[in-house]
Length: 256
Ligand SMILES: [Zn+2]
Image (spheres, rainbow, N blue to C red):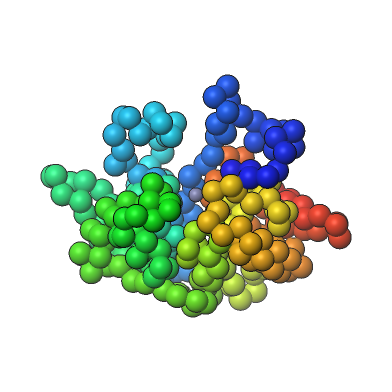
């Protein structure tokens, strides 16, 4: 998660366990405007054999169904599921196994994902093949619920996807621009935690480091200048933080 950042620095921000792993959140976000119920990445899901739960240390302390139920919502109420990219830790939960068959968890939702990410997920042999499962997208496609997006596109009024690449071939950030409210940005793995807010803090995992650096430099500056609120998928402690700058370095100001 920290690439070239010295361990003496990142150990203080994300303390490692004895096996050198760090704890990360897998946090879905919900957006509502009175008409639409939008899940921004449903999470890792339950389709995991014991072996893989152990290898990745996956602890499932809540499901996206339980989180929705706590808000009085059922999976059937969700109108849109938005993915920034198709890594299994972000979209695994959108497909469930029922009666031996793989089916969409959200049967009435349009599922939106970057075109190149859908293609990579369905094509084995990619350098990061271990991060994709065709089963996370094929059952959605079979149900006629999968829609590809490209470039910069307004998915719903005020909700815009921007395909950037870098971390993966087609990773996107999602901006929320509600009238009268300050803009917010779902960073996905472009800025995975509130500690990753300097442009050079790039994961070793990223496919194209130079592209990541360029995109992160541009978007962090834009967000800091605008005082945007960031939505953090992998940050254990903070779901939301405003981005600021002291002129030399960016600074996260957690909101919750
Ligand atoms: Zn991730």
